Length: 372
Ligand SMILES: *Cc1c(COP(=O)(O)O)cnc(C)c1O
Image 1 (tube, rainbow, N blue to C red):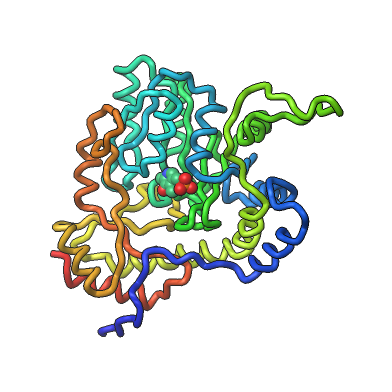
Image 2: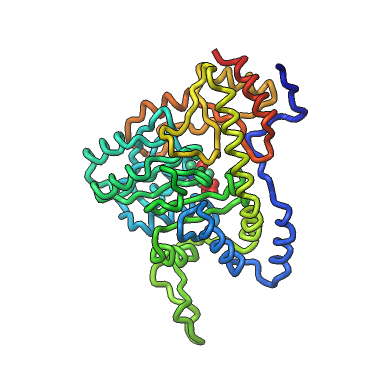
């Protein structure tokens, strides 16, 4: 059966914006206050009870800012080394460098695209000044959080989770909020909870969140405020806070998130069914009780450039997640052959909440014609 090519090109991303956004935005714009305020607080409260992010969320203006604050609140010492997987967006390493740390790249597992804990252990055995590991839940496939926790206690290093892709993911049958680690989420335009720009950093305890809430706004503490003293600055911070305009869109986007995540999961299921038996390797969870939130649909193919061009000619967008960080001028060390091979073979196929299952079929049929 040949499905009909769609009229428009099949896009990699298309945010589904909730209809209540306009009304919520109007309320904020007419309220007399459009900065960091009650709407951001409400957004944080709704995030906190959602199970989609960690327990004590602090809303910031990007996922990158969330990662940076995570390192600061984890007390990662400047001058120490931070382990980062080679298969990630540049933010993950950039924040460690901006925190004046050395970056050591860890290799990844080919079947999940996630950081290889054996590679992490090898680095930890040979490098005495590692203070933290940043693990990325690649494409929404959860890392081994329990394994990371064990590494954290064995070697005395902090673990930060880059959860930019992990909204809606489950690890060992548990929601991401059950993790004991500091986590950083992105609400960038391409992500599952899309605000345009934004993010949040979450903590397993209230104390970390309280410190992050000061640090996201230059370290300002107004608790001892008086007529002569507008604020104190016990510790200098950054200008990273979210504002009420973004938070209004965030509250609207949260309303529809459950349905959108269900849609992503049905798209992932359809891809996996249709691609079974083809000469493509599905990158997927390695444990039964893990579940990808469906941020991306990564597959490994032979002759990737040709395949991407043929998909493009058939009106199908695709992406390379990711070029390995070893290819950029980052001053990062580490040997990552699996990540480099993975990056030569990877294609991420279109997935977004407005995509139909017929469009998934169309992508799979065109892909089946160009893979060998
Ligand atoms: C998107 C992304 C980030 C950064 O998020 P921003 O909100 O764009 O700053 C960090 N890490 C990964 C893996 C990402 O995909």
